Image (tube, rainbow, N blue to C red; front, top):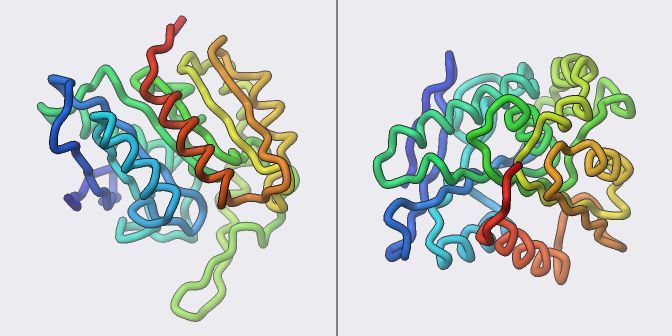
Length: 244
């Protein structure tokens, strides 16, 4: 089911997937957040992981951030803080849905979407579990051209995301996160160095955290690494954790 979620001046496109049967009275929810130029309603990783979660009785909310997919807003103006506000607006929407469990919300996010999830989770305890792939936690190695995209055949560069990102201390924010956190990162990622995930792992405030460096793979997961990721993420999201 496609739907629209209000977030300030933006209208966010989202897709809600619900299990046909479940052992739960209320459906636990996993929110998917895409990376730069992405679309949470598409892609093999989202398709495979959401299918496993539906089988386990979880609802999945596939969220498109402002300027992405069919969400309103200009991609050239997008920043991490705008994305964080959008994610928290999605949490507000979940709270208003009688069939969804507001006390059992997790977030699965990748790349710049994982940066958004870190920012949101640092300030919002409603996020009870995190699964982050290739999170950007430092903008020091980016350039003015890093966040470029094609707009109707015309090359455009978003400089706002880098300017705002340079002002955010993600490692300081991470110390505020109490949600159990699973991090994965490709050893050969050419866009975001895995050292960022290693430092993030050491900064996360939750004692329940895990880091996996995927040897021989880059920014995107494929083949056996995608299969392993889906199994590990499903296990992380469905098993009970103690939140301190």
